[in-house]
Length: 147
Image (cartoon, rainbow, N blue to C red; front, top):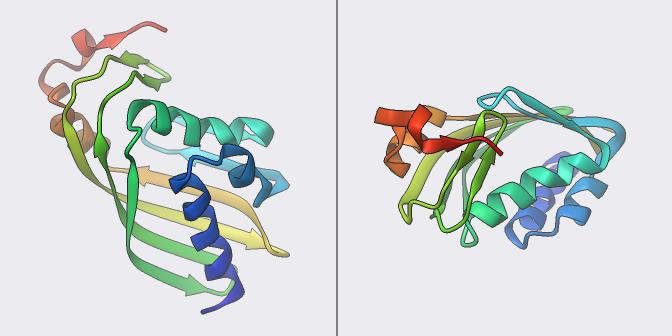
């Protein structure tokens, strides 16, 4: 296993234990997390919000890593996001109240590293599948409440 793969696996482990501060520590000072499906980029300490948002909405969130591909300083991970929607899911468009539904949403994450730190994390969650599993896809605008 390469050093870059170890760093990325550590990043997921910190997310699993809901350690948002430790999660942020693995990023470079100019690094970012881009939630592509939500259209939101996070920098600095705000990167930890991504862990906190999912921990609040899905306290039992588990990220099942299916395949990890390393190409030098680029790491691509295919995974699924698994959990039960027990808290508010805060999105840029609004907040989805708890549905108590279980998700198994596919996701692909692309990381770029430099000198042992994450400089970019582009997260491609299959949002339409996630919303369908939450039971809100048919009436998404009604499910969203302004934050």
